[in-house]
Length: 129
Image 1: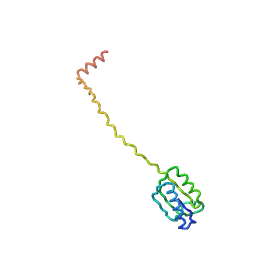
Image 2: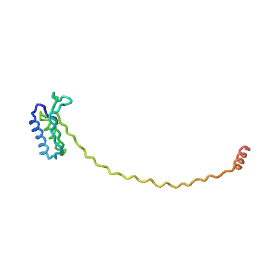
Image 3: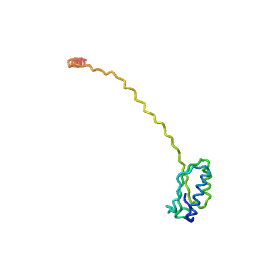
Image 4: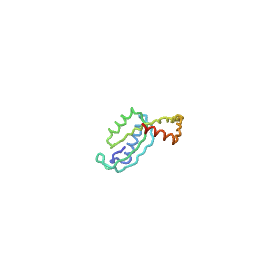
């Protein structure tokens, strides 16, 4: 979340604690909570070139998110907020590769040994015709 730079340090901390307690009231489980202080913004937001940056990691029932969004939107001191939903990925069971069937033993064709005499006889028969 980004709070207005017009707030004093103590007011920004109070606003931050108010949102943390709101998440707890909604049944959320809090993780990392940091108020990083006043930071310059990359682009102006509502004319402000800096703002108080706050990061809160929490787990909350998805049905309660609209009330949290409403609370953030209605507060004029909140310049911007982002709620990122993390989707739990389930690992797919790996299927062990099926071993290839044993190669079928093919009978090798035995080549007949041909004599030169036999070749000559065949050629003579062909030319006689």
